[in-house]
Length: 248
Image 1 (tube, rainbow, N blue to C red):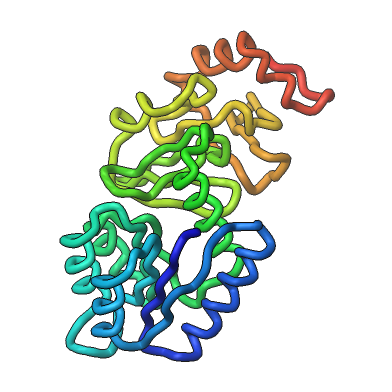
Image 2 (cartoon, helix red, strand yellow):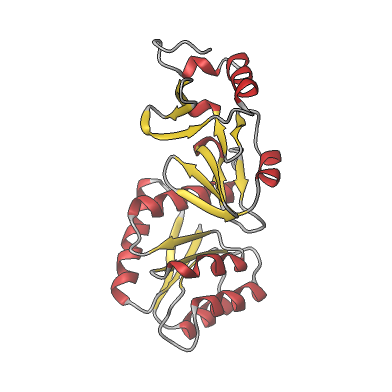
């Protein structure tokens, strides 16, 4: 059984998080429990010193002399494998949080859909599932390959657009492409697309549509068009398209 501990300065937030976790544990048949829920950083540290803990939810701003980032630093000195998940309403802390090998970062208010997505990935990681993942940089944030629709380069950032949410990291296509299987093809200087997600292509304006959603799209650059279409057709990915479409 996985032991979860939670620390937040707001008791109402803690209670709501506990209820959502319990609901997901039951619904997904996850073997887990919330062993400790506290507003006191000292209580959390003392508990970890004397008990085995698998997953820790930390609010970053604890309204005390000790922040969630301080706690994470202390925890990492004792346990390099525990899963740390940060929660905060302050989005500017996001990149700082990943310094501590963060599994995920949940912006407040936390939704049950977002929390469930995180827990599913966590339990797959724990179980050693054969599902293939992409790891962001050197931290423990992982993304299921088959959930990625496309990857976008935006300045120094790389954005992974998945079925459930977007993930941002500072990286480059040069580092990311070697991690990906053959169905991921660079179609533009700023886009890598998952061919298994493609449901339509408009060759007149070089637009790729994904998941039967006209709002989910990326683009084909002139430099990449011939190679992209060759890979797309030769790999039989055109079977994903509507019958009305004729791949050219």
